[in-house]
Length: 326
Image (tube, rainbow, N blue to C red; front, side, top):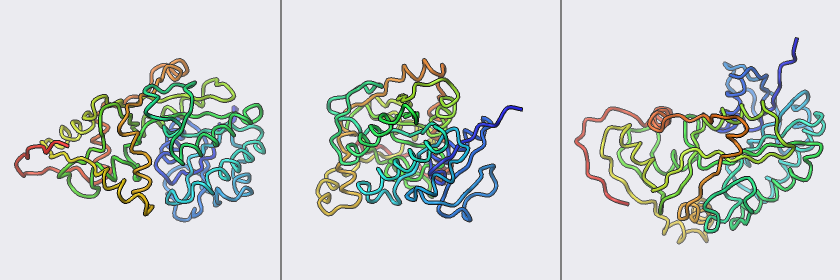
């Protein structure tokens, strides 16, 4: 009898980690997930929950025993202290993958490795010239994976901003739409055309398909997702799904820049503002070569599922409002 493939998912209680875990389960994998609080994890699915902390190497090594892949979808709590926590976390995962006999590390990649003003199209070999603090850390992280690829293979699948069921920390669910109440308005962060989005269920299914095909020891792949070439495609889809000519307001980038010296969210937002000003599209030709057809949910269906999951879709009887252009 053939051994069932096994995955360890770090960050399975988060949006992307949870979605990848679910996709692997659907494809017949055994999925183990490490969390600091296994008692609060969902007991109704087929995940094997184990206790542990991604900052503790022994915990990660113990959880990884028998794993064919380790999904590294973990981030510092509340995205704080990246400079002190992100690299030790990946070092622990590398050590665990080596102890597991060369398990492949699977990493959701970001766009922050690049200078958006100089990279309108991002491919597997595009030079990385980050401008942000997080981007420089991500470049260092990926360089560590490349350095150990001879005995610890890895897969990086890079995509745009997430949206979809289960996504809680995103521009879609925290800035564009107010969750847990009917949509009354839309805030559009776009400052021009050319922003890239990733519908999480499609991205997770892509991860699950990729780990089942032959890959290079250090494989970097791009997920095109939704490329919003004029900055209005997602806004228009929200209006169609809600059935109303909802008013649209611009995101207060000026306020983020003004408040950035005080830290917190304004500083983080101001740092990534260029990614909303300059176009950046992912070249997914390598992805198509590897798996053929790429999962792609129709945009309106993806938006509808996202809004339903957020508790933001309801029938509203008020008359339509004219849009306030951003």
